[in-house]
Length: 118
Image (cartoon, rainbow, N blue to C red; front, side, top):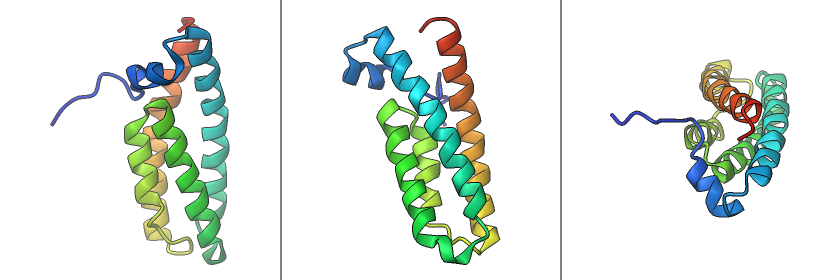
């Protein structure tokens, strides 16, 4: 098993930003708030059997956003969450716990990255 150095692959992000520190900081800051919002939405609909479409859309959006910044483990967790079924608390709670675990690592990384000025 390979250990990852960071929950965000900055080299991946740099390919899109040209390594521009200010742009990286802006994108990561936006991701931070967007990720928190999506987590709240998922938590709010996890037990609602009528929210399957919204659940998949939010998980899919999180997956794409995470891949965009190079947060691949979080993106993988969101991809698995797309398969969970709201109302089936077994599947949604497992998916949420995995997403939360990965998101804590990503959000902590972003916080530290921004605090040290990139």
